[in-house]
Length: 565
Image (cartoon, rainbow, N blue to C red; front, side, top):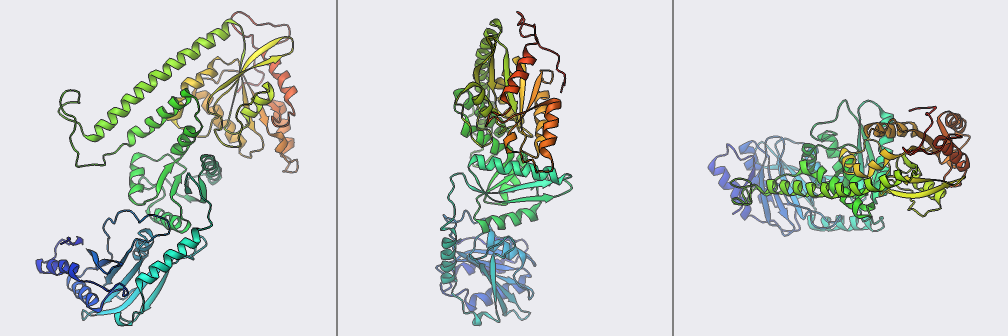
């Protein structure tokens, strides 16, 4: 016979025996509960001073008997929901309340998150008899952000119940099927984006807009966004447990299967959140890693992405199978024996070491090619900038190439080099590199260091800026910060304000402001239409070759930057 679950400490043996005997009782499928079971639960609840509940399947069999405390009932682990967004759990909860009260928030949360067929609360009266009955079930037609996801009914007693739970459950499932019939099908998931604003709401909004664009690039359908204002990030759940419960309810309403946080989750936070939801959990770094994995086409790019993924996952590996506590002892193992977790970590570390060696070998090859360029005295012009600023479009326009161009973040992952010819038989190597982003994950910075080494030999950096983005000043700061971290802050660079064709002169004089700013420390162009490219080439030629100067054996003779950054 199955055991009684929950708060059984302190119960008398006779009470436990009567609770265990509950499993032998049965309910007709077309009734919520029988009068006999209702009286049985009420008497036991009054005698023990605790809520008593049973989970009944659609055949009328009792699958679980659960004991709570005087105020609430904590249900056992029920496993995963039956396949499909439109299916319910196939279980209804019938339990007692020690005072005359409607379904509590805990009852309704269990109804929604566990996708129960029905929740029924029976009031245990002072004489031990069952009193009022409160029912709650899901509403498939609930729409709107603040709409309730459930409906409730009240009956004066068990005998007054005119309710077929199985028929109602099938009706609810049919309603959910109609709701999802016309929705958009996505291969990468349906997500709710979550952020936290601690001090600067404007910054949080800009970061959330960027996360939304990252999700679109990854092929994820964004259903809703949420920014919670807090004094500090919650150390366990990021947004707090109450807000996480709201997210679960919202996800159920929208048929979302993923929550994406606009923060890097610590291993502890990821575990705590995963324990409180069945939804897939991603953070900002995981989303960027996913995009990089999608866009890595060369062998080197795939190696670098895999290295970044393994470095991210290593501290997040957790023991999942306590039964296999000791494995692989003896020769070839580490000491007398290793846990499965230790083996997993060792394998990941070994793989990381191997990938680092392969990337170092590729880096050596790059160094040889750079030395060959230096011997031929060919200047190097590197295009850097925020992701989706138009770097690849500029490269294509200048060199008549066909590098992949998409209106997505990180569309170009692998560096591309082309020759660019200037008048008077002058040539440069122009290189397009991976785009930068705010709070670029350290794992990516380290993994792509070999690729970013190309920038160290650049004679001039073209810092491409998306002038049409209102947030471009912060994007410039983010790129400059990354360049400083890479030790490239002393390399001469020219700000190139791209996408000037998208600017509207009526937007509070923004065009006039940009033009004046470009005259001071850069140049305004449109890589799409070609506007301003002639002036850009003249400016680049002026910076690389001052009039009357030629290339020296040691490299390019560069003028002093009139506007150092």
